Amino acid sequence: MPNSNHELLVVTGMSGAGRSTVGNALEDSGWYVVDNLPPQMLGAISDLFSVAKTPLPKSAVVIDVRGREFFPDLLQSLSELRARSVNLRLIFLEATDAALVKRFENVRRPHPLQGSGTLLDGIHAEREQLLSVRESADVVIDTSELNIHQLTTSIAEHFSLDISTKLHVVVQSFGFKYGTPADADLIADARFLPNPFWTEDLRPFTGEDAAVSDFVLNATGAQEFIDNYIAALRPVLRGYTTENKRYATIAIGCTGGKHRSVAVASEISKLLGELPEISVTLKHRDLGRE
Image (tube, rainbow, N blue to C red):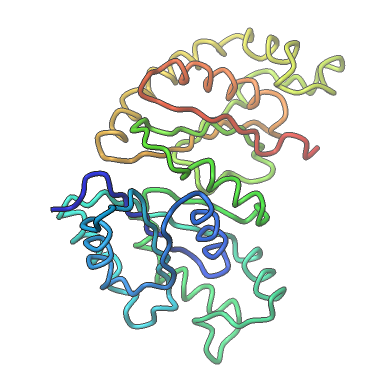
C-alpha cells in the first residue's frame, strides 16, 4: 500500500514556460526531483519512494513532450495512480505565445514540436496536445510575466516542505487593463465601486494606504459585496478541500490594479485568514506598474 505520508508532484506544461526552473526550485526546497520521466514509470517511482527504508515524504517528476510517443499516456497514468489513492498533484505551467517565442529566440533553440514548421507552429501544436492535461491540473501557473527569480520564489511559497493540510489560498489584486490572470480559479470585479483615481487627493496613493482603503471599503455596496463574496466562497473552498485541491487563487480586479482591487483584496484576505482551515497569501500583481 502507498505510504500516506508520501506526496508525488507531477510538473508539466508548455515548453519554455519554466519547467527546469520549477524543478530546480523544488529541489532547493527539499523535494526529490526526477526530470523527463516517461509517464508509464510514474507508478514505479511512486512505489519506490513509498516503500523505501527511509520513505521520502515528497517527490516531484517533470514530464513533458520531450517524452515523445510516451507522453500521450500521461492522463491514463495519473488516473491509475489516483485510483490507488496516491497523494498526487498535477502542476501545469503555461505562458502566452509572445512570451514563449521570446524565450525560445533568446536561447536560439527550436521548439520540440516545431519540425519543419515555424516556432509558432510548434507552440500551437503543443498547446493543442496539452489542452486536456491543463484541464486536469490541480494548479495552473502562468509564468508569462515572471522572471526566473520570481518564479523560483513563487514555487518556494507554494510547495515548500510544509505538512499542513490547510487549503492554501492566494488572494491577488490585478488591473483589467493589464489582462486577467490566467491562473486564477475565481475572478471578481471591483470596478462597480467609486474610483479613487478621480479624487485628486487620493490619486497618488494606493489601496494599501488607509485613506484610499477607507474610501473604497466605506463606499455604498462595498461591505455588502465583501460579506456576500466571503459567504459564497466558503462552500467553494470547502469543496476544494474535499476534492483534495490544496491551492487556489482568487483574483480581484479593477481598472489599473492600484486602488479598488488592492483595498478589496486586502480585506478579503484578512477575512479569509480568520478561517482556521485556510492559509492565505496576499499579492498585488500590478501595484506599481502605473
